[in-house]
Image 1 (tube, one colour):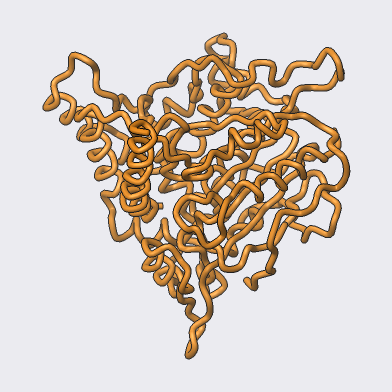
Image 2: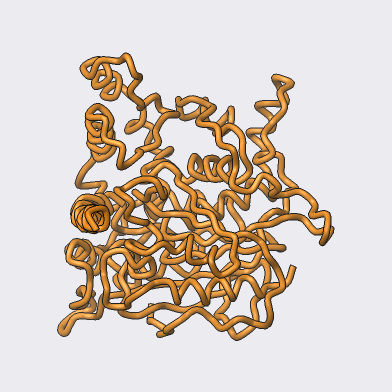
Length: 435
């Protein structure tokens, strides 16, 4: 009983800390078609590709955040799906890192091995090329199965920025990266499988509230807080210096981990002198902005053999006397000021993405118009889902009206209850996709 009470108190503390702390950190980050659930399975189960869960901006892994799950809050989506015969793994990439760096980390976590951020990329942005080493969730990924004689693939289910990570991961696996290949060929080095290309290893990509065209929250808040990354990095250093184990900021490629024998003053000086916040295009802020998304969309394309699905969310409504959008009553309190800001934010500055009233609907963190798939500077096709999935295009599964940015996850808002039934249906859907 004592252990039970201790665990219950621990969870309540976790909810309070994460609701206030991580909810605030999220700030540093159309006409709605109503749907209630994921699409029904298109038939019997046809594949057993593992499901990989990719978190969004400021997200965390399963052994962090005082046992409060990113996927499910006080319940555990991963373990629930595993109990229903769906092999499922949860990744934990850099919460404030660029989607390029996060994709490299996700690759190593699934396949196993040392994170390789790319020789050219690392040199261009001034951080270490190699990161942590992982045993691998699914080392047989990409190999030919002895029984089915098919390539072992995975389903990627991604929330928010995780959707950008998934797209970059698929692009690098399928097409490689010419600059990385050239940088290694010159030195006669062997390049990572991630940059080699010709790897058809992903069965499907499903994005939940992903900012495929960026979010105006990144544009507006980060313009007001030009030193936001320095602030984040300083907070990271403070957390690390105090030896708190609950949240890993995963910035080792920038040298932002305190050594065991390193004094705090020395560590703080090193953090303050880091290039992390000055390398403005190798962090989440750039990738989440409309301009950063436009750049990503220029080289990341939907691959012909992959099924792509997008789910949106919206919890704002048009005002009584103008076109501005106001947060609905049920929106998570921390998101309300952001939703109002986004619901009236416009821009038409030279060399920047034009933001008009079509961007006003949002879920408190991401503009709804951005969620159905990449459009700005992209050749990808987006089609309204009509009952049968199509490979190589974005199957737009619609918008969950009245849902804020975290309602898919079941973290903070209990209005929609247990998130596990949603993921049950989603898992059964991707499990019915043909090989």
